[in-house]
Each structure stands twice: as C-alpha cells, then as structure tokens.
Image (cartoon, one colour):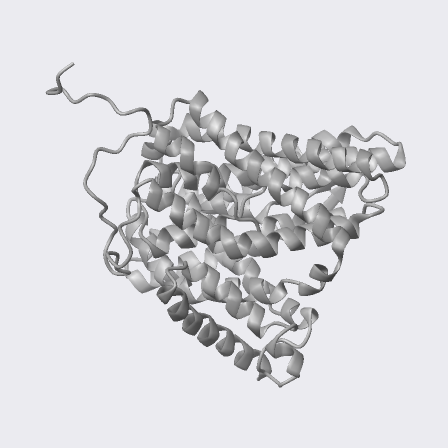
Amino acid sequence: MLILIQISICLIGGLMMSRIAKLLNLPAVTAYLVAGLLLGPFCIGAFGLPGVGFNTLEEVGTLDLISQAALGFIAFTIGNEFRVEQLKQMGAKAIIIGILQAVVTTAVVDVALIALHFIKPDLISIASAITLGAIASATAPAATLMVVRQYKADGPMTKLLLLVVAIDDAVGLVLFSASFGIARVLESGQVSLITVILEPIIEVVLSILLGSLVGLCLFGIEKFFHSRSKRLSISIAFVFLTIGISMAEFEIGGIHFGFSLLLVCMMCGTLFCNVCDFSEELMGRIDGWTAPLFVLFFVLSGAELDLKILSNPLVLLIGIVYIISRSLGKYFGAFSSCAMTKCSKTIRNNLGITLLPQAGVALGMALTAQQLSDGHTVRNVVLFSVLVYELIGPALTKRALISAGEISPEGKTSARTPNNPVKKIFHIGEPKAESGDKK
C-alpha cells in the first residue's frame, strides 16, 4: 500500500513542480529532480510520514526496478535514431565525434586528478584518479532525450546529438573497463589482460548480439498482430524481457560475462526500427505510454541524491576539479572532433554543452569502483557531480539547442505538434551557397 502511495506522490509532486519550472523557463527534467530532492530523506522524508516521501536512501532503492525499466525504454527509444537513412547521412561523423569526445574527456580529467594527487598524495590515489577519468566520459542519455522531447527539438545538431549520446555509452563502457582494470593492477601489482581488454570487448559484443536477436524476434512476433493496442503491448513486453535478460551475469573459465542494459535495449530498438515498416507509428504510441515512467525515473533519481556529501570539504574539492575538467573535456573534445569532421560552426560551438548531463551510467560505474581501496571517494565525487550536472545540465542543453536554432522560442511549442523552427536548410557541414547566389 505504501509503495503505491509513494509512486503516486512522486508522479503528482513531479508534475506539479514542472508547472513552477515552466514559469521559470526551466526544463521539466530539472523540476522532476528537484521534486525528488524535496521528497527525499533529507527534506520531506526526514519527517518520517508514512507514504509521504522517502525516509531513507534504502527506501528509495526499493523502487530501483522502475529506474531500470525507464533506462531500458530510453535506450530503446534512442535506438530509433539509428535508422539507415540517418546513418548514411551522419553515421561516420557521429562515430568519430562519439569516440573522440569521450577519449579527450577521460584524458583531461586523468591529467587534472593525477596532478591533484601529486600536489596532495593523501587526497586521492592514482588508481581512483584514472577511474574517475573514465567515468567522466559517460553522458546521461535520459536527461538529453527528455529535453529534446519536451521542446520538440529538431535539426542537424539534435539528430547528431542523439547518435553521439548513444555511441558515448558504448565507448564509456570500454574506457571504464580498461581504466578500472589498470587501477586494480596499480593496487594489486597483478596484470590481467582478461580484465583490462577481453571482458569489456565481450560485454559490448554480447550486448549487440543479444539486442539484435531480441529486435528480430520482436519484429517476427509483431507480424502476427494487427491491432494497435496488441502491437503496443507486445513491444512493451519485449522491452521488459530485454531489460530482464540484460541483467544476467555469469562466469566461465575465470572470464566474467555480462551485458550492458543500455546497449542491449538500444540495439533492440535499432534493429526493430530498421526492419519494421510500421515502427514510426508504434514508437509514437510507446512514447505516450512511457511518459509517466520517465517522470518517476527522474523523481527517484532526485530522491537518491545524497546531500550528506556536501558536508565533506575534501569531496567538494575533488568534485570541483572533476566537474571543471570534465566540462572542459566534453566541450573541447566535441569542438575539436566536430571541427575534424567539418561540422558547421553552430554545431561546433554548442554540441559539447549538450553532453554535460551525467547520471545513471556514471553511478553504476562508481558502484563498481568501490572495490578500490579509496573507492568510497570515487562514489562520493560522482554523487556530487551528478547532483550538480543533473540540476544544471538539462537547462544548459536547452540553451544550447536554442542557440543552435533547433528549439522554437519559449511559448511557441506544443506537446501535441512537432517543433517547427524558422524554416531553413538543415545540413551537418558548413553552409553551401545556393545555386542562385552570386559568387
């Protein structure tokens, strides 16, 4: 009974807070996160009222399955962006930008935190520094997708952004696995090529294969049904099935096998949307069904933010260095890779800002990093950065998309109609002269 009351309070609180956010011209995502903070154990939850808010962080964790389900549907939706037409137009650029910006971010954070280690060795170890560098590469797809949806953002940068965010997760997974393997080698002195190289590659490959298989099965079964409601139900059932299977882990011959929930669901969505001729209409119906699920996801994310870390000055110092270096790495990594791939000036100047949000993927990595001798420091720094990035990241993403001209002026968009910014010719590269232009 209390769980149902908590879920309803989360939905009502998040939606009511979004009305206040609208008056302040803030994205709804920020409102949901703030609502979660207010309902969490450090605000309303501290009063201990049954069903009203969350009394402890453990109590928030009992609803973790909702967050996992929401992440699965978010990844499935992002997979819809990987259509063949899209990939032909900007696939190569998205791959180059997705890889380079992640690598540059990891390198910049590594340098900054290792320098901090040499200045004050007892503050952070080299192992934790390089682990945090890899975690910095991860970008939160959920916040980005929600801002794009809310404001009906459309244009070359939006399309490129969704591809880059999806690729970023795969790259971040490999970078983290390699960096964490090196970190454990530094602490134990034992080199394991299986942990550093083989296991992350296996995880990515297995995730792609599983996602492709489920996507094909979903298409095959969808053909047996013709009513919209039954097709919607089958799609939802398969996404839940994919999420459940992707949580499986096992070990064979000393090699750990696992899946990335985001990669599996994204690949499932990608394959299904490319082979199914009615996928566009079906994805629109899934978007409507998942709306309350996404609200719950962000409210719960806000409730999970641990405000106690703000009382630790050492965590704040490392966190500030981490946030500054990560922001610089994301911006200049995206800027340089966009320049390398000859993207327009508008995209070069704004894409990096949209890659700042960080949440679930980074927290998952931080949980693994707690195996290090000072892994609690890594977790607290990531918690602090998530608190900052999740509150300001969506607003910055919105500003960047407005600057790129891909969101209509405030008050001109509607949840029922597509965004139609000022009519222009969209392209990824530099503007080209029209045939009638004078040279």
